[in-house]
Image (cartoon, rainbow, N blue to C red):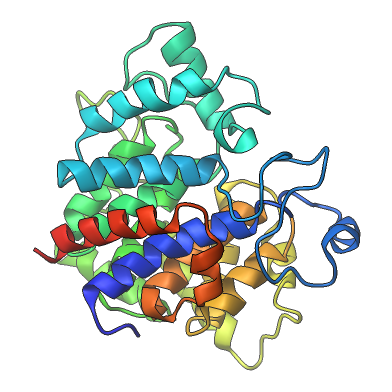
Length: 358
């Protein structure tokens, strides 16, 4: 484990940026034979997208739109000193929405996710206020930016859950998406705080629930729903149907290191859990890879990238978890050197890490 809070925080954030950029070229290959034909048997570093593919025209080491939005979130946190929902929404209105047009193959990074297209349609197209523009897309788009909130509030699980769930609900209002995303971020917060992502992660999270520090329900009472009186969104921290999103990751982490359960090569874990974009495919494979390669950032992110399908989201989320465990100091230097805007992003990460330490 990394020895300092700052090292772990910076490792988680830069790990996510690196995972995003590493998958830029070989993104969304569901035909793994085609992936190998285009990039060889094993992608080892940053690559440019092939003509006609997603993100075509971008260069090796650049970021997709996920990296753009993660940086926007990180910049808001670093400059405000804490999460300011109004500032975050203002930045989306001023710095992001003018760059997209509501179609898929457009905007920063060359592709706009469905959840952001739906938010754009309601916010820009129909003029609805924030709080009424979320949709039911079940991808990990919210997690890919909200992981910065998990790092910022790693020492305050209650505020972490509240800010993450509120931020995600701006664009994604499905309760399952909200629960699974908040659970992932709660685990990332523990990692940044100094815990290990292993078979014991669920027990540690549930201890926070029982102590009242992590606002998830342990049991849903008779007649209870996922919506609190007066809530504008269909979920918020503490009103998810069950703690199962917290419990499942521990079982997956145990399976990843169980000598009686072998998935070889490790890339097949993504095929086992599912290659598509939905949270119920992505998070399980992320947890498997993070636990299996907990001490090896390079192996973790490159396995995520070489697994195919929605490998970009997988690499972002794995990169954050394992980057948080090993720390920025143990991320291979070539990944830092090859990442566009790395110095600027490191400075932002360190500024926010300093605020977290205080």
